[in-house]
Image 1: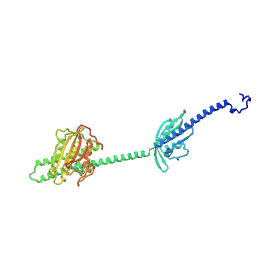
Image 2: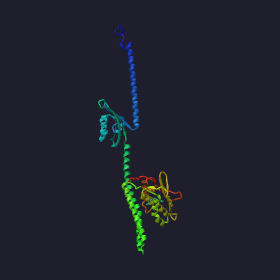
Image 3: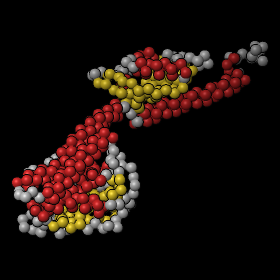
Image 4: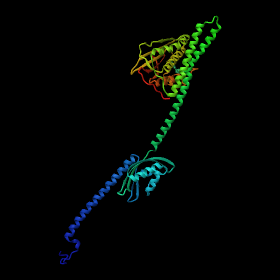
Length: 414
Ligand code: ADP
């Protein structure tokens, strides 16, 4: 007051009340300034941390602010989009990069900008050097009160490798499907030739026997009738094979029925007995009558057993002067399956070929087709069972297959 009344001559700035309020204001201001600089430091720190995390995750971050109209993007995001590492970027540029050749992406982005909220799009970018990249963009659009986009934040991920792997897997799947189908068709036609060869050669033998019989005097009508019956039976067998394979091919289905294993073994024994006697091979069948019947396709299962027994006979005949012995056995296995085995006293199978012999056209025989085992495996697998080969400790090979004893619907995809 004294200074104001000019009784005391002093500069206004130096009077105590002014100095006190100035000091208080300065203290307050410095506290705010310090707080602001601490906040700025923390903000920079968390921004660095975020960028580091995004870089480690291979993600690029970007945002757009309506107020400033500017786009901010990390180095990673710029590289992904094929943009220069520095320099201004326009929101329209970003939109054009993402939606340049894809109307679906364009529509999705427009919808997100209109409705707000989260969005996720996948688009292609051709970066300098003509390299094509697949990018997944995930983002959040914030709208203002008038419903106009105010801020957009997003994360970009380069999924080119993943996309390439997916394309390759699809291509591989397509090729496999094709190969599988061709193999299946090849197997079916080979199966037809293979399965028909047995009854056709039996018919041939019987026809030759009948011709020889006609030359004899007096004509043995009884024997002739037997031969004609055999021809009719073999013809029926051939017709059944064709019919069954045709229906399998057509519907991808096997004809399922209940078959006592002993019947299956006897059917096969009846077919090979003459051949076995001629080749001096002893066949033992120890299939018990009391075994539960199996469920499956009679023609196909007997074809598998016949093929295994004929292979076993070929194997023992190949051995010089050794015991020529083939054993057919069957037993109830686990989980409602029966296991049938055909063992022989032949040379066995080289250990490295135990799996290979099931491949189509794998044969060691001069006149072999090498399809019998592969077809047999297809048939057994179509019945839900397994077919494999083993070598016995005392020599020789044993082939085993399993077939279900319960009633199940047999399906096979052709
Ligand atoms: P193929 O009889 O026309 O050769 P398979 O598919 O039935 O066709 O058999 C493939 C191969 O498996 C035979 O050529 C043979 O080398 C081998 N093989 C099959 N059964 C036996 C067996 N019991 N003992 C030894 N080798 C066998």
